[in-house]
Length: 390
Ligand code: PLP
Image (cartoon, rainbow, N blue to C red):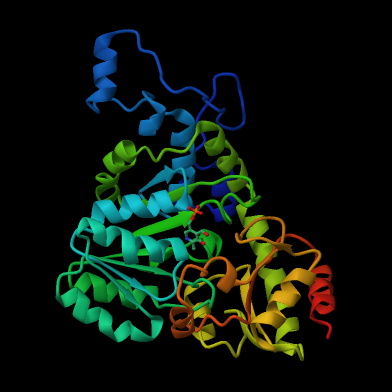
């Protein structure tokens, strides 16, 4: 069976792993900053690109990093993957390399992404356009003006808005632009944007790919041609992951499918329980039949993910009270780990936005975002029930 035909669980375990002369079943940690050569001619072969090989870890030329990148590329069905020291580093390298003609970001994105695009990159003359999900019809005008890169998350943070990757990719390509999808919330288990027509996939590997709330990392996947120029930005911005972290991330990826499938099932059970709860105003979860993005999510996703948001009846103070009373859910602003987490976006991920901007984006103070971990669904629902009691 060729590697192209192998299933995702098999790829999680075996893809990218390098042969080890001592028989280790996986690539060891090469915890070194530099690699030695026999002759100057050998050094030049690697430096000039005639031979692939290890050279210097900040460049990514380290076997532990090669192995991780091979695994990450196969999980997203990409020709190539570059790994970074954080999700924001991956995004920044992408924007610096391919954002020169302008970047349009559609819908709710992670707060750091909005800050980078909204106020930091424009300081270097990069034209950026932040469009709400409801303003998708304005995208074509931006593309007609020459905007070269479209960026979106789907599902979005924190309202779980779903965008049609195939049709947005088709529109971007019609104008010679590229589409980048932040696939952090879905993970490649639930969604493979490159197969739907996207040109880049970006990940905060800190979340589901890492999966244990113990590493900070990022990744960018795409074709070899499009990724080639990103390499120098990563090298000279010094955005490389440490070898120990790279090995930990490879370790985590071996269990990705098992973890995410369990998180999908538990999130569905929690979402259904919250949809029935008398103290909940609204549930944002793509797996609920009544959710506005459900039909599209069913078409382009294999599973609906481990993230959901709820609007608690009674406004911001009521939501804060629930967050503070939860016992099993930890009050922390991240996602994708084994431990379930709760966060009130207006106090954390979207605290940096003005209240009017949050309201314009439909992020109410009454909203709590839940990251479903690997605990039993019944225990998580019981915890929410006790915290929601009047
Ligand atoms: N993308 C999404 C969807 C995120 O949630 C985050 C962080 O929360 C990032 C990107 C940034 O990732 P990192 O914290 O690894 O830099």
